[in-house]
Image (tube, rainbow, N blue to C red; front, side):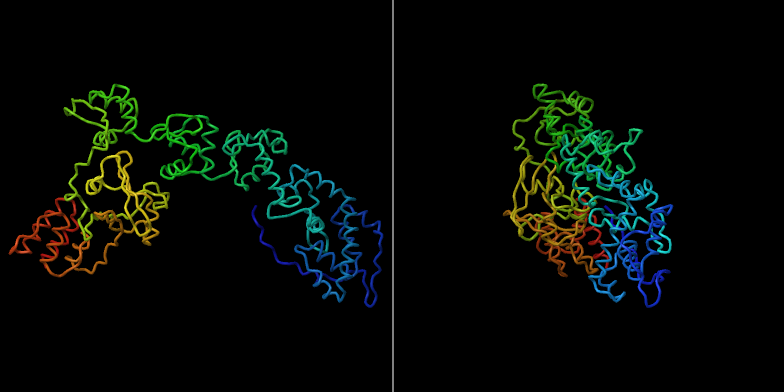
Length: 550
């Protein structure tokens, strides 16, 4: 529940002395209430008359311990009145008895008790005052409401906290309510709203009362149709919505139905991180307990289509079935046909056959002609990740600990990793896994890499894979304004001002033949700039051109 910021303590001892007190003579305090006090037309006026009957000490106790906005310590009242703390406590006990008689006489305590049955011990403060309007009445000459008196009189059995009133406390009221809800849960944190009827949750119109709606919201519960979900986080809401809807739902449907709005990427992460949910079709998810067949990717659907047709189909018919019957997009169809599960023969009018051993497939890409992939000291292959290690499943554009970063197929060719395989590299923080999933190659758990190397998710970095099985990251830079240095840095090579060495380093980086003896390094660098441009490394080519023009 929300916390109300305490207001300023009302100075209880600056109240004018009682009109009944006289100098040098204490007013006699009677143990019996003056009948005129109980004859007052309202409880507020009755409490005002009671205050009028008190001497200076009694008035200080009444305002400081019962009627003020905040309680004043007994010791402070004792010092201010020149009395002992024991005398102040004795006065408090006498006043408490008299105040109870006044409140009971006007029915305030009974009305309050009626609002707080044992099974519903919380109310909005506005509801309490609305039902018992006399609580809002100001006590004449004191300037505070009757509600203060009720609050301080029952401080041990009633808690006023911001907008809420709880009996005995807000915390105990919530604990009792939550325990009741937990006994009513069907599954996946779902409770039928009808179960709240026993606690007076509904008004005469059959809808939830304003108090109950506010209590559920402040408790971070979510009303969904005729059900209540015990939580408001996506990890609770998503499986609960699937349970309530009782059918598989697409990502688009979940985005529309789940009250906690999430992007498609964030929703995918929520679903993938829940052991109780699984994908059962393209962008379609279900509860695992339903026992449906799990779907992994479009490649799986394509393999199932071929298997259902004896393992071989005409390519045109296969493509039509995959697109029209299984919803496989053309891009996914082409990408998967290039993978090791499928043997395509005869061109567009030929056949597609399901292979027995996809691990025999090795990407045909030539890593020496691959954009941003270089041979470096180690010996090793270094892939320059210009966008950093942003995970494909990250929620906010940055990486999280279990993110996977997609690597180009050319890296698989460089690492000699057949389709469907995985490879473990040794790293300073332990082990680093590179693994095929479907038709994509992933660097796994990049959040660990970020932590180990103290990298920002979007910081450009070289991913370096040693030929003998080690892995490390290397920062890119710094750049000093020298174009030749920049070209070497972008290719992951040592920085040098010697054109001959620079030429050798750059040729090595793309697997070119050694520089012929006696050749002109400037001419060769110009030719090499063209090779970098042809493989897509136009940034390096531009730096070389800039250096040669100086």
